[in-house]
Length: 227
Ligand SMILES: *Cc1c(COP(=O)(O)O)cnc(C)c1O
Image 1 (tube, rainbow, N blue to C red):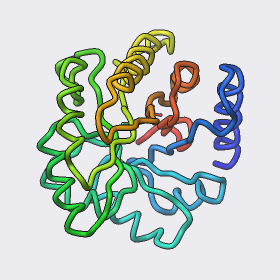
Image 2: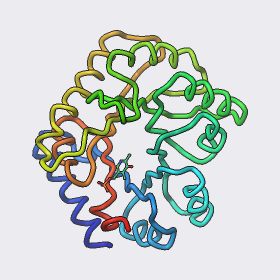
Image 3: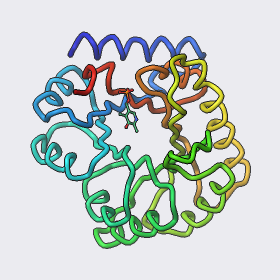
Image 4: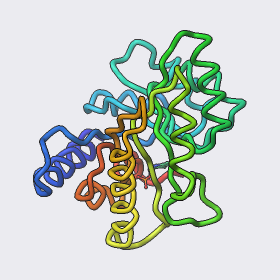
């Protein structure tokens, strides 16, 4: 585990430097769905600081088991508004907001516990009908809706490109997400300052870094193939 994580961290550092970006400008989110708390402990010992979980119930068990450890929890799975209550109680950043309904639910639950919830918007850049995420055409109206929700803080955008064998096939989607972020920045929407781009996984994180990722979500390269 330690060797695999060291190798990922040095590949990240190399990609960051290779693309002329500031060292430390990309964070590793260890995608830990289906991985036990015991395994996560080893990952923490090896230097992982952020875990990304896909299922609220599964995550809560691990969060309880690892209470007090110096780590952050991100939610990277599909979020239903009925799970909003648990999501705001347990996650530092939610990567996958894609409807105003989910945003409202998160805002309401965050207000109840007096929290400002950090979120990203998941964008379906490819337009595949089976994918979660808001379409590029609808992002701006979603952001405008979110900008009036006082207990949410929008930090940036997230995407998952279509499955591909070759990381070069992901590049246009990463580029499109970075351009979308830049075009939103130019609109100067009140209360919206976005810095984060969550993109890149085991097979394409170096390409994502070259296109401006600030967070990469890596599972298989850290934990091995999921059973
Ligand atoms: C599982 C998962 C990942 C990690 O995928 P790997 O190919 O195993 O690195 C990243 N993002 C999301 C949303 C995931 O569900």
